[in-house]
Length: 100
Image (tube, rainbow, N blue to C red):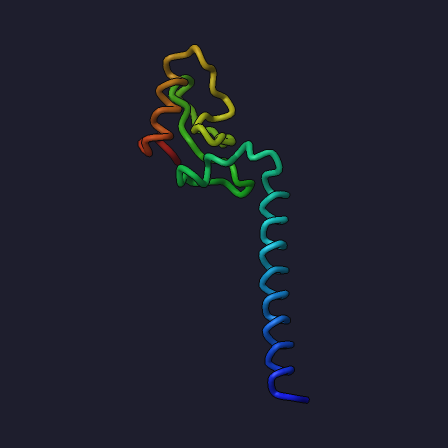
């Protein structure tokens, strides 16, 4: 086989392999969090449990919780009109939330 043809074929195979791996990774990430409802866990670098939920200490109820955190830094247990919940969401965004 001509060296140029062999080189072109190898380059195209490598390119296809990279595209396949990128698509596979994106698919796996999408399956793990299809709605993006836990986007804040990784964004705010929170410790997680085996299911990928953030491990935080609830300010309102003073207990350990494993919850999803949305992209705005609000835990799933967040209630908009409660001062402790508002403070917790601010702490998540600022990186000062208590974790376990």
